[in-house]
Image 1 (tube, helix red, strand yellow):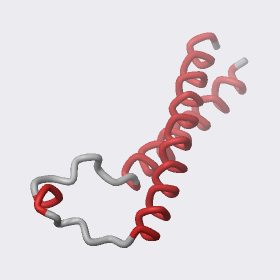
Image 2 (tube, helix red, strand yellow):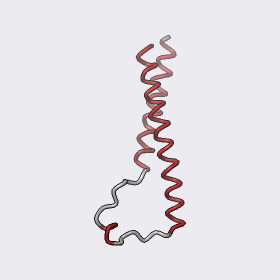
Image 3 (tube, one colour):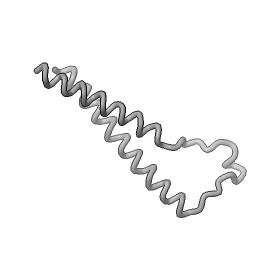
Length: 78
């Protein structure tokens, strides 16, 4: 049982670091005052690629958060 707890602790640390990195890679939702006056100058194709990347990062964030929660629960059981 102690070996399983050690493996879960290591996995929890690695997944937590990955979760922090994925969250930091995401863009902020608020674009500030400049966007209300036409400060957004990206083309539609660049926006589409960025939106696709952001959607993937959001899905990965949710998956990693669920994995962290499950591992934390497993660690409390062991």
